[in-house]
Structure formats: C-alpha cells, structure tokens
Amino acid sequence: MSRIPHVYRRDGRYIFRRRIHFRNLISKPIAVALQTAAPKLARQRAAMLSARFAIVKSLVKEMMESGTPLTGAEIELLFRKELERELSGHVQRAFEDGEWSSRAR
Image (cartoon, rainbow, N blue to C red; front, side, top):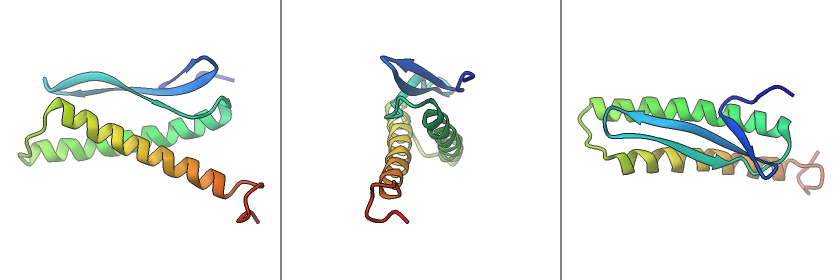
C-alpha cells in the first residue's frame, strides 16, 4: 500500500501527525493515535482528521483576525480537543455499526 499522508507507524500502530503553525505563537507538531494497525482504516481516519484539521485551522484564523487573543497553548488545546473528539466519534460509530453489534443490520 502506498504512503498515507500525515501518518507514520510506531510499533505497528498508525499515528496522525500535522504541524500547527500560527504566526509566532505556535509552531509544533500534534500527534493523535489512530487506534488501529490496519492500513485501510488508518487511511480513512487520517483523511477525516485532515479535513477536521483544515476546519479548525480556519476557525482559529477567524478567531485571531476578529481580535480574540489566543496563546500557543490555547491553540494547541483547540486542535487536540477537536481532533480527538472527531476520532472518538468515528471509532464509536464503527463499533456501533460493526457486525458483532446488536445494532448491526
């Protein structure tokens, strides 16, 4: 399988990693475990997190342009919370819709 954008493997598990950069406030990577060792699932989850990353980046940019004072730590926390919330929702839906689930069709 070809390389998955913004993803690397550590001990057989996939990790999503992007750099948060806003002016001189913050420039650091953020990593979120994708909770899988399956490349196909990692690709899907990484695509979902990349989309959420772009949305959060746009929202933070709007906040900063509107005059909302944000520190680097606050920006990092916003990104981390949103990415983890998105991933946990995706994982929860996957378990609920799994063939072993009582809700499976």
